[in-house]
Amino acid sequence: MTAEEVNQSIQEGKAGMQDAIDHLQKELIKIRTGKASPAMLDGVMVEYYGNPTPLKQVANLAASDSKTITIQPWEKSMLANIEQAIFSANLGLTPMNDGEFVRINIPPLTEERRIQLVKQAKHLGEEGKISLRNTRHKVMDAIKKAVKEGYPEDAGKKREDEVEKMTHSFGDEIDALIESKETDIMTI
Image (cartoon, rainbow, N blue to C red; front, side):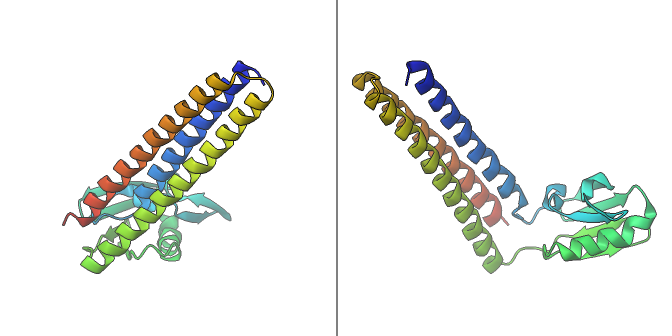
C-alpha cells in the first residue's frame, strides 16, 4: 500500500465522519423544541395521485408564529390527504383544516416530555459517535495493513495519531451539537 493509498483511506474516513455529523444534524432538526418549525414535518409523506410524496412538494409550509405551522396546499383537494398524512406520521401533532389551510398548533412541552426529548437527542449523539468509531477502526486497519506491506512504521504511527485527532475533533463537534439541542429543548 502506497502513501497515496493511505492518504486516500484517511480522506475517505474524514468524509465518513462528516457524513455522520450531517446525519446527526438532520435527525436533531426533527426533535421538537417547543418552537414551530416547518422542518418538523420533513419526514411526512402525502398520498399524491397514488404516489407517496414529501409534504413540502405538495404544499407551502411556513411557521406563522412560534407556536403555529401553516400548510397551504397547491391544490385544495389535497387538504384531507395532508391532514391524514400528518396523523399517520405519529408526530403528536393535531392538524386543523379550515378549507384553505391546514394549521398545526404546537403544544407547549411538559417537563417530562422535555426530559424524554433530551434522552432521545443523547441517544442520537451516541449513535453518531459509534459511527465515528467504526470509521476510525476502518482507517486504522488500512494504515496497519499498509505498514505490514512496507509503508514506513514511523509514518504509519504519525498517520494513526492524525486519525485519532480527527476522531476526537468530530466527537467534540457531536458533543457540541447535543449540548446545543439540549439547551434548546430545556429552554421554556
